[in-house]
Image (tube, rainbow, N blue to C red; front, side):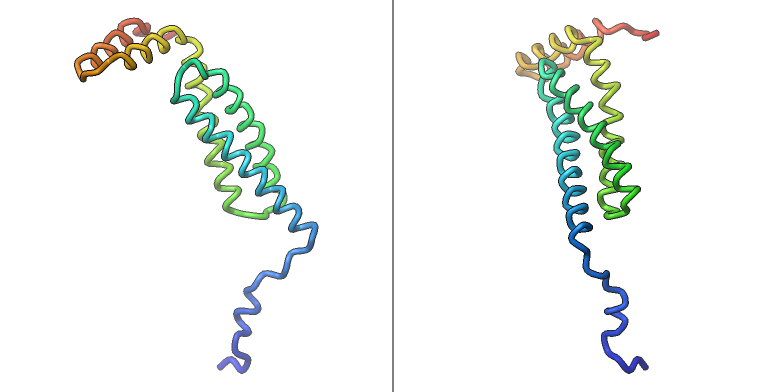
Amino acid sequence: MNSQPGRGAQQRAKPPLSEAAKASLTKTLTLFRMFLVSVLGALFVYQLDVNYLWLSTVLTAASLVLGIFLLARAIRLRESKLVLIGTISGLVVAVVMVPLIITAMVFFDQVRDYQACLGRALTDRATHACVTQFQDVLPTKLG
């Protein structure tokens, strides 16, 4: 038996962080929050309206830059696994946003007309007509 109760808990407890480590962790968490806001902002703005595509582009670019910087910091300092996993997940979302934004830029007029049609559609039949019209104006084969 263990003669000292609680000794195992004391061995597993992390040592207290120094002031420099606390400041570094605070900076990492602040950067992580900024990164999450930029990724989620880019995703939500992209879904709003094609007229705000420029804002989604700026937020996606900012999230890619912040994500790469944060990923390097998280790997180098090994402060938080949650930050590392969250950064990788956010970077995947940002990378997926790039072809979506490029496609919306290429077909800007068609997407704008489609969104306007959907805004006027009050029935399922009208919505289906908008989808059909949108499909008809897109090229059948790209490349």
